Image (cartoon, rainbow, N blue to C red; front, side, top):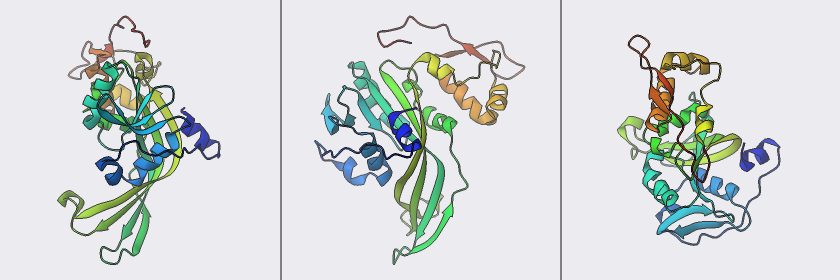
Length: 259
């Protein structure tokens, strides 16, 4: 559990740093409240906001040198940036919030009057991370890279002004706000990632068996196995009928950052 989550769960407000961005840019003006609130809550004394590192603007540079990127959207979009910084010897922490509970607020497109407030039927969980990692498996157990998942409560404000995509029936998301951080979990090493598979589950592992063990269904479990295999942590083992089955890959020699 990270510092941010500990502070929230204890009922005490986490420390907020009065930081000024070192560089202005489109990211600061286009980001939703959720992104900026997480940066403010993660920042501590001596940290630098929107700092230039190796030619790239980083959300936070911590006083101990760790780089922090808050990614509320697609993880796939930041893979090249994160891996380039990590390859240059920087420790990089990718913080990704998953909404466990979401409140939907709808505004009148003309008057901006609040029309309704409801709870979304969609609920994320820790394993929702793999919905993003299917396009960002290169971050898993990569040297110098930590992924921290924050389970959060959020509020999303929408208006149907026709400017949104047809898939959303013209809805536009006006803002996404942070309500509460419920918990966090960090993954860096091979062992931390493989710990997602219950020790009681005997290999080789199929999506059906893992889905049942985690109570998430085989489709979601398949994403976990796929991502861990793409990252080189699993290899295909003997098939269970027509189903793919996996076993842990042999551990490589640990680098300077451990394994």
